[in-house]
Picture 1 (cartoon, one colour):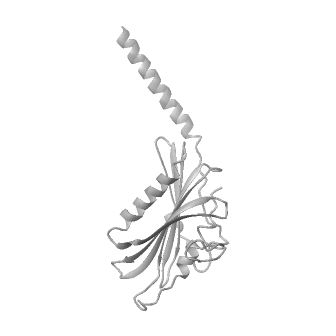
Picture 2 (tube, one colour; picture 1 turned 90 degrees about the horizontal axis):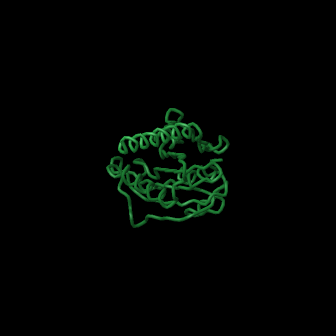
Picture 3 (cartoon, rainbow, N blue to C red; picture 1 turned 30 degrees about the vertical axis):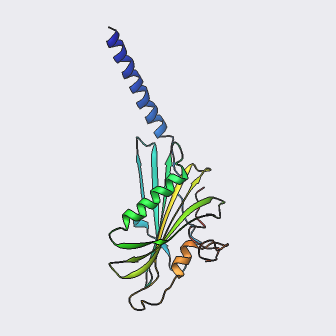
Length: 211
């Protein structure tokens, strides 16, 4: 009799938890971080076909992402991913995960130069303090030099975590000894020239709106 009552009690708890999960899953909404149109200039554009959204754990974790690109002799791209959970992820854990994503994503196609890897912090237009990591590398399939940035922060106002990963080709096969960092500068620059003394107010990451 006691065992039957205990089993009934356990099932009541499980049922209550499931009901609460369903209720709370409908309460979690997400504000997707974006780059204002006024900053998407000089040939850059958002690739609308690569927009994505998703959720898991009965909607208790949601995410959305956008990709900004530029074509030409020195192509570049920037992925902006927004994540919303019941509790904000620790920023150091975000940084660790981003490093893992970069190294795993490019391990078969890009030779990363660990000796020049750079990490640091800076403040964006929306006053968020971020953590960034920068890699020099070479696309071994195309024999071209590239630069990669990963940058993360938490937005307390919207309750979201932001992960940015940008990649820019700085050489091409026509002029392998000449480096062109214009598109790299567009990704990383800020008014203080925090990264590589690349100064400007229209940096893509610097201008991201997350709330």
